[in-house]
Structure formats: structure tokens, C-alpha cells
Image 1 (cartoon, rainbow, N blue to C red):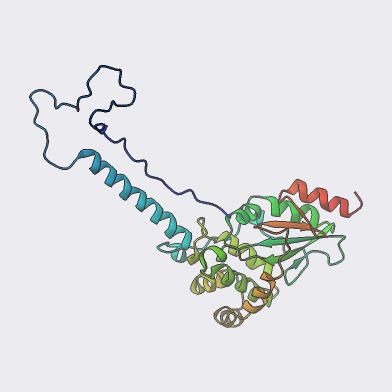
Image 2 (cartoon, rainbow, N blue to C red):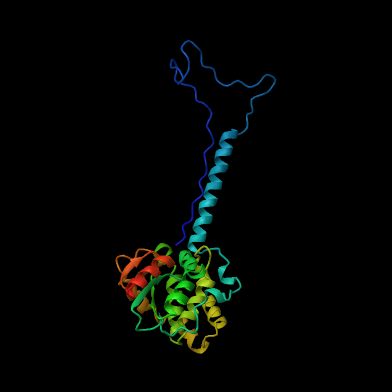
Length: 276
């Protein structure tokens, strides 16, 4: 999941403070007398607010505003994600319809290599894995050729940080699509339409229904499944059975062993499972 850096306000340098009576300022040469800063000749010392104090207060206000902005984006509040136009998944990174699937499994059930893919539909790193080309390479070069099959698993990790339940809602929507034999189609639509900041309101009930309509699902079945959170209990049960090696998303295991989520690493592990 993508991490955001918090802005920090730098406190302006403070004016020098006179030392206690009889003491010498640090670095002051022996024998020289310390004197406070004098107002330039011909100028009157201002009786208004101290400029440094004003600058400090301004910096603090800016810092608070930055932190609040980051928090709002992380929690999904104030975002317009739910009202943004839907994006159709690109053909280059969409799951090929020619590859056989069964629920959340993609590819030949008898393949020697099983790729267990743990993901969160709100996860920006998972978006990069899916839309950045790695998933397409795995699908076209390893799954379509019968060397491996993919089994999807939900790890609603972002919900653990903001308690929004949006990752769980998106996972449930994908399960509802799986009821119609269209899990991987919904998988592609969800990633194409997640929030770049992982905001929760990208996957409100209303927007999930809009995504289902755009994806061409049978809405008479999909709508009550989403609204009633039909598969939430199954997904929550899976959260209790996450392998200890899986600590984030995306996580890729080939025949039970965690590998880097790069095509080179996945390809190497699949080749080994197929006898090199």
C-alpha cells in the first residue's frame, strides 16, 4: 500500500536571548560586552506583534493544514472519488477472456504451479502490479500456456488502518461477480476505478453498483448481493487464515512459497515447479 509523507512545518530561527546577569554568551570573546540588538538609527521600535511570533504561528497553521489534508485523504473523507467518471479497464492489462476460470481461480486446474495472489482492491501497489504489466505477463506467458494457475485471496489490509470497511465491500462485490462467473472481469474493473490515494469512498455501495452496471453484470442478482454484504462472512474468515509469510499486498506465493511480486521472480518459481 502506498504510504504518504506527512508535511512538517519548520520553526523559524528565534532571536537571541540575553544571558543571565554576569554570564557570557556562548562563543563570546572574553572582555567583550554583550548588547541587545539595537533598532537602526532613525527607526522606532514597533510596538505591534513580534514578526517571528507571527511567522511561527503561520508555520504551525500550515503544518496543521498539511497533516489534516493527509489524514482526510487516508481516511477517504472529503474526496470526490465516488462521483468521478468510471474508467473502462485497458485491453492490454485486462484478464484474457480466453483463459478458463472457476470462481477466483484462473487457468488450468491441473497446472503444476499454483500462484496464490493476495491483494486488496484499494491497494495502490496492487494497482501497479495489475495495471503496470506484471499481471498481464503472468496471465499471457504463464497462465494461458498452462504452466500455472492463479488463485485470488483477499487481504483487506487497508481496512485495518482506517476501519472504513471499503476494502471488504469491494471484495464482497468481486465475490458477487464470481457468482455470475465474472470474478476476473470485476477484478479488472475494481482496480481500474480505485482511488489513487486509496480513499474509501471510491468503493461506496452506490459506486460499486455503478461499476457492476458498467461491467455488464446481471444487476438483478448483483445489487442485492452487494447491498446485503452476502459474502462478507466468507471474506472475514479468510482474514483469519492468512499465511504468516504474507504481511502486505500484493503478496505472491508459488506452490506455497513467497516470492517477489516481479515477473522475473514469478517466472523463475513457475519454471522450477514445471521441472525447470
